[in-house]
Length: 240
Ligand code: SF4
Image 1: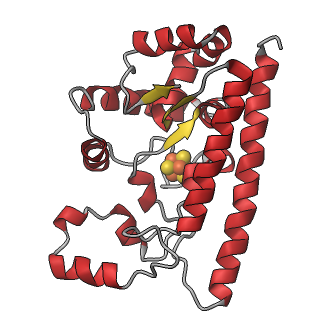
Image 2 (image 1 turned 180 degrees about the horizontal axis):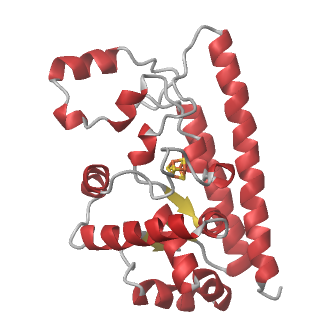
């Protein structure tokens, strides 16, 4: 197959289908859970989980990059540059996640009102995070929570439902991961390699460095563009 803009559109369309599938699954799961007396705390206006590091496949990031306005584009540029500097010398995932939560502020795609500016194309990772506890726990730094409070939180979790020790619904997170895997395989079959990484970084690479054009030329060119922009860090972008 000739690799062209059609290939990119195909990847974006597949990602969209996967997002719609997950959306339906989440809605139906939440309805059933609530019917059975369970409580889900996610709702409009809450963005506490948007302080966490979001990682996605390439197609989902490209879809976001294509709908960004100038203001959000500048926010993404600032975010990506700050994160690039922050992770220098960081090799471990827990340290990266802690630094991200403490230093990066919210997702650069949040608008001035604290709402997701790309809600219709938000990635699987965001869609699959469904909270069974008050949203204050979504942004909590557990190292700063008193031991008794932490124990009470853990004891209150429904281990049949959550991805223990988190309070997020396991089956929905697992489904999001499986769909991401499928997306990576689709990219692999169309372009012979796949890309996965921090959402803001991938969006910045697509917007300012034409990562999509480079990807069409092959893995080597994509890797060159990522390295030239200074994002060749395994915690930021992986090529496989
Ligand atoms: S993409 Fe949207 S939903 Fe996801 S973390 Fe960013 S602002 Fe939140």
